[in-house]
Image (cartoon, rainbow, N blue to C red; front, side, top):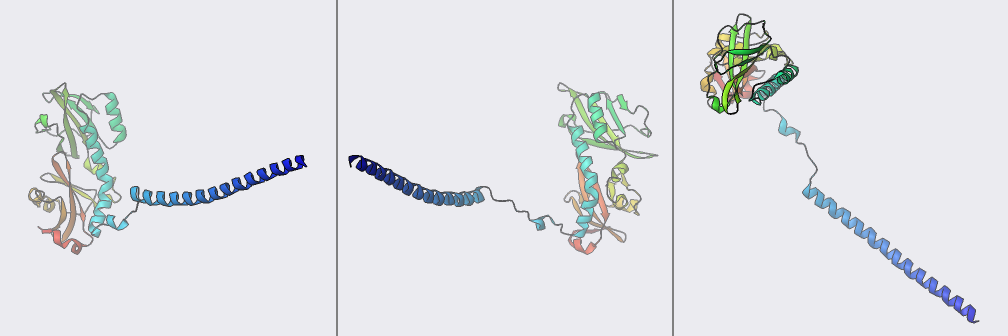
Length: 274
């Protein structure tokens, strides 16, 4: 009997412990589930507050007029490489070596000439040595070289224009000469999806195109110097045609991209008639 009672008591204790443990286990699961759901909801709310999901407002990037949209589509593939070249040249303030030259020509295959001068302006290096287009007159870069600013010069030869981007280079802090990178701006226009519809105006110089039907003299007669004092884009009327334009600067020198407007009335507030 004593043995039986001992076994019975042991079983009861085992059963009681098992039941109590099961109660704690059951309660624990319920508490864990509730806590997990609460934590999940709290984290979702906190994450949405701290790191909200990105929302793209496609309407915010729409152009105000079809004229702006047309010009952007035509000039962006041209202006991007020109801006990259300007930065590449501007970053070099010491005498360039072969590696720099090779990288320049690899990245910008439309560049047709690279030259380096000494402090007196004498050419000490030029690639190619015998260019297709010879320099028709001395290239004059006017600037205070302590400003270390890009300047441009356009050489109008019989074979067409050659635009040079120039900057000084130094030895220690002493002015040591100039780096000049030249290219035909009409070669850049070929990067546009429709080259014949885009023109580049060099105020006071020339008008560059790839077969566009334009009145070059009338476009050059526009008082660009006055327009550019307060505006960097707009619409002009030259003769019977309207042009949407945008000015971009290389260093301090402006160059104007333009294309014939598709809907002149869309930009009536920015008209200038000449």
